[in-house]
Image (cartoon, rainbow, N blue to C red; front, side, top):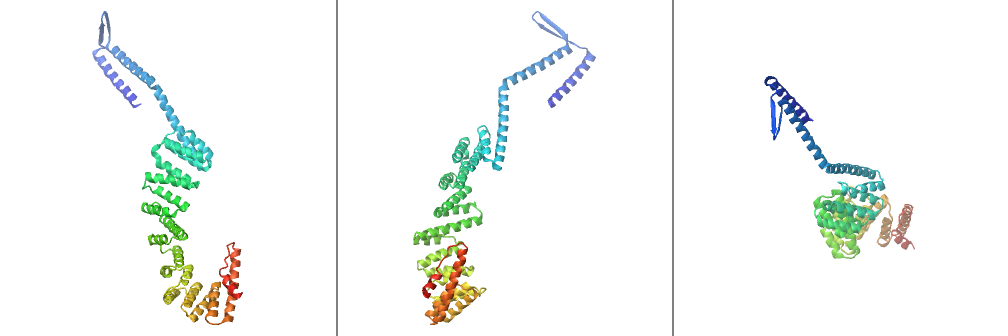
Amino acid sequence: MKRFILAILLAAVLSVVIGVATFYNGAGYVVFSFAEYTVETSFIFMLGIVAAAFYIFYYLIRITSRLVYFPSYMSHRHSERQSLRSKNALIKGLIEMSEGRFEQAEKILIKHADSSDTSLLNYLMAARSAQQLAAYDRRDEYLRLAHESTPSADIAIGLTQAELQLSHRQLEQALATLNHLSSVSPRHGYVKKLQARAYQQLGDWDNLCPILEDVRKMKALDESLLEKSELETYFGMLKNSIKQLDAEKTDRIWQKMPKRLKSNSELIILYTTYLCKQKKDKEAEGLIRNCLSETWREDLAILYSNLTTDDCKKQLETAETWLHGQSRNATLLLVLGKLCFNCQLWGKARSYFDSSIGIQPTAEAYLRLAELLENKMDEHTEAQKMYRLGLMKAVDSQSVIGQLGQPASDKAARPLLKVIQ
């Protein structure tokens, strides 16, 4: 439009100049001679003919050019319309997916996938829709088409495939996919994260451990979640090696375990229980002592009282330091009573057992006191009374557990029944 206005202004200026020149100098004339023909006309008229011829020639060229390029122009317009339809179809398909209409979304996304500029995205979203419809064969076919449409997007397609396989609990297939991606891109944090997830769901703790080390280096997982996974992994590794009776492997796992995890009470309970079975009470005593000095755990304290060490008095002195701040802890008093019994301090042991029962009566406390009274203090009548009270307590405990729908254990009641019978 600007060029057109500029041309009109230029023509107007030239017209004024020619008009002024003609007014003062006359119209002038132009003579053309060719062979036997001669043409004579005014200069003004000649300019008009030249101008008209120029414009006619110019527009003839424009029209010819349009005719020549008309097929490509129509093809371009068709491509633009097709691209617009594909774009609208992708948006509509994503909306259908977001609203949970996966069947419609799949149809819309696939219909325009071949002609779309975003065919990769169409196929990946269609694969996710097929996954929601449990159409796993179609899902795999869409992933194959996605790879054919964009071979350079191997990582993106592989990650989508692995995510969908993990979601469908196809753990072995997912792991194979992720191992391939890991070989292609060894430093890809999300690949390592999904690998860890696959090994974790498979319960393959031995292979999960080095993967978690890579995840930590790459900072691919939140610290709290990573520590939880590491704890579960080492717990699983220890549990499996103990179950396999592989003492060397069990000790090696504990030695290579990060220091921050060695203070975890669950791991300590598992490992020290194993040490006790291996008659390594001295090593177990040190681990439990250090743990209880930082964090009180009643199950660990009970385990501590069951240990047999060379210096039971030192073990008792250590346990008595735990009385500070929890002098009325029934479990701790029971532990101290058992340790006094081991040290042959009968009067002190009885005092601790009585204090424990006075705060919170338990079947074990009654049993330990009854054994002390019967075997070491010759108070048989009082011992029988403690046995009866312990049996009643054990039966009451079993009734409560049974009402809660939990499996009832008769470990505490069995020795009491044996004595009374």
